[in-house]
Amino acid sequence: MERKGIQYPDVLNKIFDMLSSAIGSLTNPYRMQCSIRTKGLDVGWNTVSEYVGHLEDAFLFEESKRFDIRGKDYIDTPSKYYSTDLGIRNAKLGFRQDEYAHLMENAIYNELRYRGFAVDVGVIGIREYIDGKREYKQLEIDFVANKGDRRYYIQSAYHMDDDIKKEQEISPFLKLNDGFRKLVITGDDVPCHVNSMGITVMNVIDFMKNPFSLERM
Image (tube, rainbow, N blue to C red; front, side):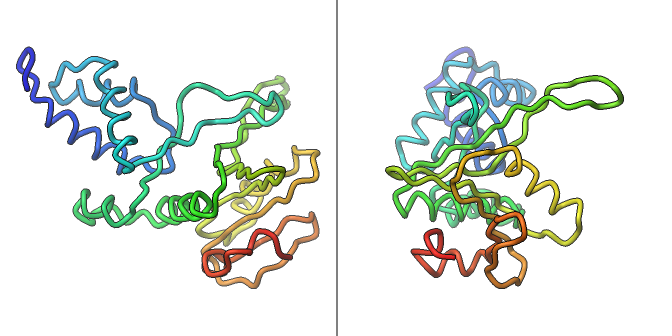
């Protein structure tokens, strides 16, 4: 099918590649449209959005929307997209993009979905003084996992090998004042433990192997 010289299978193929490359990163159809247009394809936003929907309907990707934890409302765009089958994703990209941090994040997302959780991206808006000026910024929690009356706040951290990285992963949790459990799942070889701030730190293999890993500790 063609219109104005556009090869629609080429557009779908590029969208498939973009979503595969962008797992765990914020994006939306408008951003993808802009990127496709730089490659010489004058495709409309509605077409891109429709094709993203087709890939979701084919169970190749799932959208995880951003959720304002304090405002208790969803933020329409951008969102994160995760591959439902990392084997297909890797094959589509020719096994060229071994970004282990994003692959681990995607694997954790898939495991949470397999366990029956609804999974959103958590957003916490804060105001703080930077260079004497009060500025607004958003902190992100990788996963807000909900099932029934249960909720877990989860960060995916491939490595936490320095204090700066630890602060980056833990600081959003410190802005929350509810009693739901907070976890950091890491690729580091560490025993499962609860730190001095009440945050559970767990190795990703321990999380994957035990279907009740979130409930224990």
